[in-house]
Amino acid sequence: MSTELSIHNDFDLSTFNTMGVSSKASHFIEISSVSELQKAVRFAQGKKLDILILGGGSNILFKNDFDGLVIYNALKGRDFLSDTELKIAAGENWHELVLFCVEHGLGGIENLSLIPGSVGAAPIQNIGAYGVELENVFLSLEAFIIDSGELKTFTKDECKFGYRESIFKKELKGKAVITSVTLRLSKDHNVNTSYKALSEKLAEKGISEPDIKDISDCVIEIRQSKLPDPKQIGNTGSFFKNPVISVQHFNQLKSEYPDLPSYPVTERQVKVPAGWLIDKAGWKGRKRGDAGVHTKQALVLVNHGNASGEEIWNLATEICLSIKEKFNISLVPEVNIIG
Image 1 (cartoon, rainbow, N blue to C red):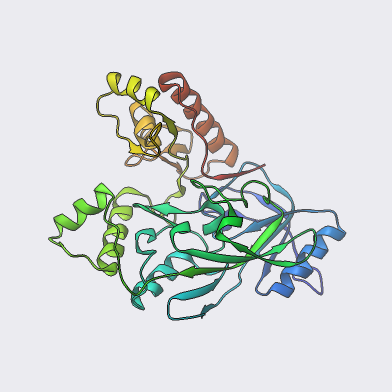
Image 2 (image 1 turned 60 degrees about the horizontal axis):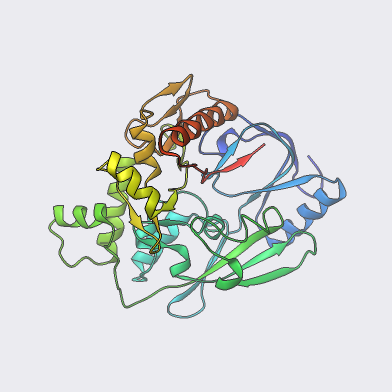
């Protein structure tokens, strides 16, 4: 332990990642202020250590130990900038923020209920679910630039959002630490029920004019029925992105697999569900040691107990090769792979 900063050496990260894989960080610190973040970064730079920022640990797979400084982002706080604009510290829990907004009559993120992880991780992925993406309500964020030590504001355009993408997964990967996110929400609720599973759940409950709480409650129910709880079994939610393919490629596959679902992206492209492909290739419920594919949702890889990150990754690689061979589609992990 360092005296000025609480730096832990040889730190066990198994409870800091929802996959529950055993991994150690050579150095670890929890920060709860921007000044602590600045000091931690200076410490790492002085020791020439690689830096990894960790939030909820729900979108990360440690293949090996991490030789560097893991900075656990525990920045907290929520501030109203206006009736509908809310600035949230990056260490806040995402789902708790959604519940807070629903409770205060603020619409826009109710479809994103029960997505695991922290607020700071949300823009990195441009998280999305049930017809809504973060960018729909995103206003700006503040990030600490590691090299220069400055705090910089990023607008929506500057974040370069795409499907589960942003500048923080590309050009600024490992170069910036998100410290807060500002969202523009709405008091006039224009609820989004475009997603089939959601509209079916509402109909099943006899709700014809849903409010934001109805949407949130239904999304929570759907997610709980389909996705395993990381507290019960290690997982990172959706492991792969849903691939986008050409309409021509889709039509070829559709003639062979008439039940292949799709979602339009552009006139020339459609998105197909990775979970469907993995299921169709016979992977659902299969195991390689303690690494496995979930029995209900093939898009989710699980740790049945003591799987290593490398074993999970080997299973993921095997699945990718199988999907490429069967459908000529390349799957890309949605999860951040470390090591």
